[in-house]
Image (cartoon, rainbow, N blue to C red; front, side, top):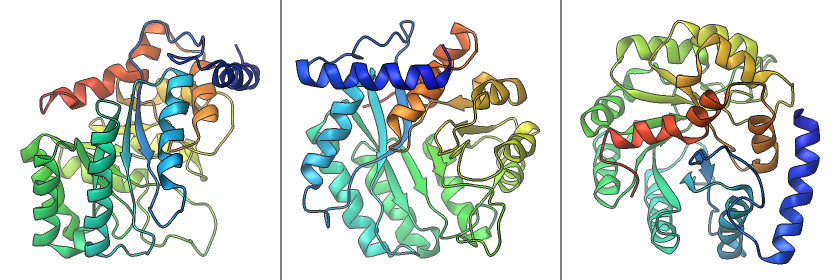
Length: 288
């Protein structure tokens, strides 16, 4: 099924399922795979309806057959301030308890805070978080990031890092990391579990794939805004299905459509849908 056909079908099915109170995928066939969204977010509590909005994320997962969703909550300012990061991580811990077993937490960190940032990692992991979320406060190749990666290796946890390869100037995110940066980081820390966010992050996705082709330890998530057909097929051919992680980054219908409509083998679809992420989580003892 082509992606556009699937999008129309999935949207209609999810709408009907919502009216009927259905869950468990709203009739979508994932081929028996456990589906894990490796990159998502819950809402900052400055939003008046944050509680209902967080619930809507889980409702959407129910309708689309997504069993677990790996989330972070980001402070609103850039660069992110440590005191606000801690508050957001506290909010996320509350939502992990509210949606126990469904929401898996990424601890947000700004590496620039040094020792307090490392202490926040430890505090969050003790509370059941599954990994680290880094934004673009620093490029992933800047030395200030290295202690975060080294502690993540010690804890056997993944690091999801915001990424993109912009093709315009001036860049709106001057310290954003791209595929070449992640390839360099992967050479320095081949034992780390680093997830490059956004296969379709609003830039040149073909350039990103070429940059990551020779970085065999870096994972790539499938979220993003680009609607080109054939993106996942090209990614699977270029870097291999073992390094791809299904993700929506809040664009659920588009991401599910891109995934379900991809012309790939069912074995590769299962790997990308959740099996690869399950292996990452198993390094530390599984999802909580």
